Image (cartoon, rainbow, N blue to C red):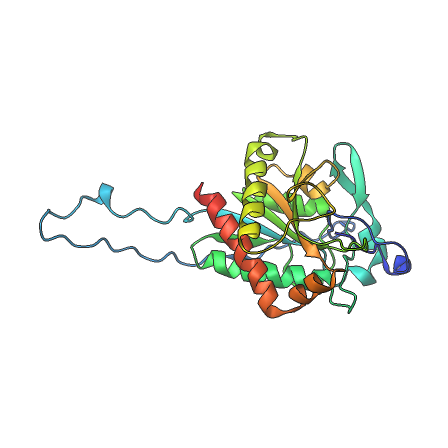
Length: 282
């Protein structure tokens, strides 16, 4: 996704793809408090049988595959980034020996609907749906009015939660004529085992499920809906299975309309939720 780097640079060119932004770690920054949603799993009652004796405890109905799983959702950017240039422009580790700005402001539709609001809304919808299935959900930010957190901190939240899956939600901002469609980024070449087959499978599952949900793959980034990246700090620094979804191009009129509507955001959320559930079941 493209995004402006700071208020002083608002007139400048938007950054390209792979949104990663995070709260600059100010001197002795207070730790980011993640919000965890842990619903009580539904009780499964085995069906009685009048023919065979009651089944022993070991053969009782098993809990859902999702039970006990942990998913970290990373809504790209944050609503307060634009008014805190010094914080979000501070360089932080980004993996592979690189440093990058702590975070960015993100992009927006031509009508002004911001990416940070889109990603926050979709993440909440996904999180609520997963929590209802007994999945523990952790968010990298707790509202849409704060600053950051920085990309390295976002990665650390997923690592510290020992997440079974980390999904970063973004939208792109390409001004290329006709640019449209979603793509899913993953770290390549992998820096650890989790970035290998697990992350690739997560990315492919997200791609397949979004496509089944009626979304078109990008015609301007990556190939067949997937984008191997070595420059995204949130992916590079993760030690858990992780993928970043660029849901579409906010500068494309049709996609902007979909992202700006509650119905459209629910469609994105439904596909991402289904993909995460399928990945966890696998």
